[in-house]
Image (cartoon, rainbow, N blue to C red; front, side, top):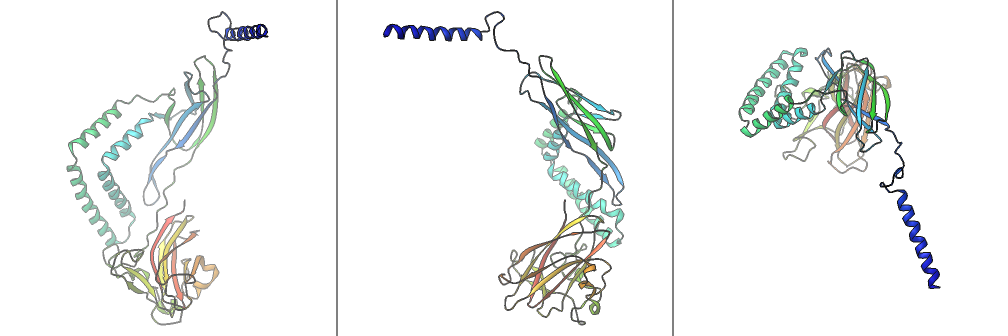
Length: 397
């Protein structure tokens, strides 16, 4: 029996040696199978276009930049890359590290950059501002910011200045981008369609090609965020530092806009001396339980844009009551017309059911401007004393 086991052992050992010799790189014309897998190229594209428009939506400049990143199915194999663009006239190449270095400089000069951005926003508003009092206030704010800017520049430490100088030296030393870079930025001369192809070649000389059509869209101005005056009903919150928290919310006519057909419609003000109790500041709009008061404000919007209006409500709980906030077309001229469906762009009604006395809750209304250049924010209540606070509006992306 042992004799047979010994024979089997040697047979298995011999078989293993034979198999090992088949994959030995030392034996002539015997070894691993040839790698016949070629590269499969692909690339990712990120639109990093930037532009600037004036307040009349006239384009001042646009940089149609797209970041390209090449890749293939080969993790490591000595790959080479070759881009081709059609049409290529006017297309320039940018080293992928240039934006990163510029952002690093901005980070070192964060305070200065923030002040410069504030100044730029104010300067943007002045040419299209028709109210001379607002222009005066804007110019005064710019003058004050210029003083802060000079102080911030003078206060830069030697360490920060050296870091900025080093980063600027790195920018100067950057190699020009080429069509053989794996990552680079194409700066297109303008809107249109471009065919961008990529050839990937491995270290065995095998290659493959892929191509996409890249659509460069015309730059469009950023939709401005509408301005709501005295949004938190705070004293002295108008552009010139004045206001009693109600001035921007007065209806143009008490008789036309009164829910009761007459009497004052001006909202009251509820005050909390301690910060943090109200959603914003120390004042909120108060609507008595008789429903006689209304909040009215017409704001500018961009035709075709979509917006989200947010605000907070609070109620007393001694009986049932509600607060209604509506977005009305600008041709609405009375309380009766504000109830007509054709004049209501959007609305929301909230009740005090399940609410806690005087605890504020946030709400939102989404609406489209349509063809309107202005809309009216209109608020009424009924049943119980109600409060309204902290309006805000954003452009829906």
